[in-house]
Every structure is written in C-alpha cells, then in structure tokens.
Figure 1 (cartoon, rainbow, N blue to C red):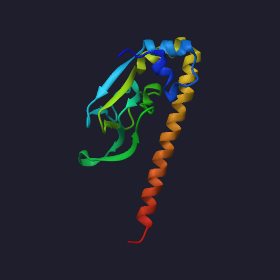
Figure 2: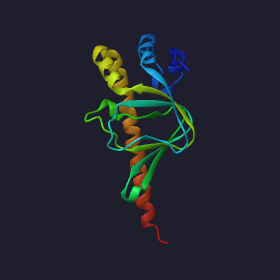
Figure 3: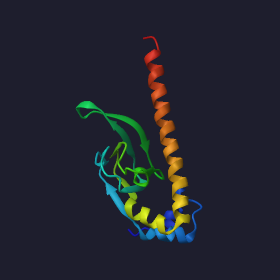
Figure 4: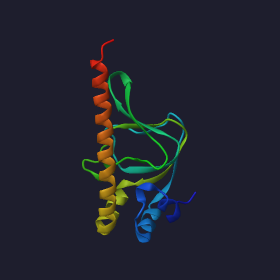
Length: 156
C-alpha cells in the first residue's frame, strides 16, 4: 500500500497541513504492520521513527523490574506513536507493544529532522503538533499517577 497525500490528509494529527507539506511527508512514509503482542519500541532504544496508527491498538508501557511492565495508555486509530525522534537525545521514553494486529504509517524520524531543517514551515508544523502530543501524554501519565495514589488512600 502506497501512502498518499489523501491518506495523510485524513489523519487528525496532520489536519490543516498544506498540500506541499503532505506531499513531502508522503514521500518519506510507508506502511508498517505489527502482529498482536509484537514489541514496536523499547525504552532507552534509539528513537529514529514515528507512526500514525491506521488500525489496531498499541499499548504504551513503562518497564519495571523483573520484565514486568506498567501499562500507561492505549493508542488507537489516528493516534501518534513516538515523539522522541524530535527531541535530543533521541531515545524512547516508554515501551510500546501492539495489543491487536496493527497497521500504521511509518516515518523515519532522522530523515524528517533533516527535512525540517530544510523546510522550516514543515518543521514548525510538526513541532507544534508533536508538542501537543507530548503534553497530552504527560497529562495522561499524571492522571494515571493521581488515580493510583487515590486508590492507595482508599480504605479497604
């Protein structure tokens, strides 16, 4: 499946981008598919890509001792997976695993960073949108943390 500007334009993350910006992104994108339970990214690994989920579900997890993982958030259709490709030191902050069979638009983050250096308008648009995702994820993690603290305080 070839990723077209029409497919990109339909993604909430990319709404409002110019036709030229979508064309540049389409040239740098491809389809990725993951089986259920397949690990997509590893905390601490090199963050050199990102995805827009077309179908399926992906779980964000924080690894802890003994190969256990704390679930943080479930991402689905239209959600973005991976923002660390844009911020030094370019390392993943979480693990991600396909919960169900998943299809996604795949972008090489390193090539997009180079493209953003050449096309500052595209870079600014991506920076605004990725920053919004970062804030949403931090708020979700904070809400989860507050919920866990409240549960600890409830009498049994």
